[in-house]
Length: 152
Image 1 (cartoon, one colour):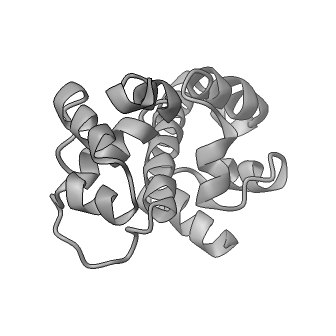
Image 2 (cartoon, helix red, strand yellow):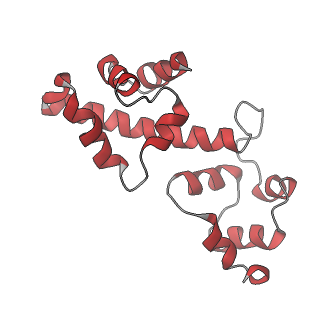
């Protein structure tokens, strides 16, 4: 797991080795899933600054910190998307990039009224739209379902 985390942060996202080492040793973030779940959407921007940047000497320079903060924030967002894709069982499967949402959710026994509500009111047409919507926020699905007629 640690090798995957190092590759994800350093090679894919350009995060400095000192930052990666701090995350893994001090914050015990050893996987992409750990990173995805470490901060909430409301706290990740400030969290990166207060939990990471403030503790690493290499990042005392404003310019170095700016770059690493931007890269770490982007890595956190990507980790959330990867984590959601894994949880939904779509990671690593060959699929069309714009897979239609309705058949995907129907296979998972989601009520057709909920699917129709997502399409009409949340403009979710594809699996990618669905993953992006739920990973780009800390939204809870319960209020969405509660708006659908059969579940009121």
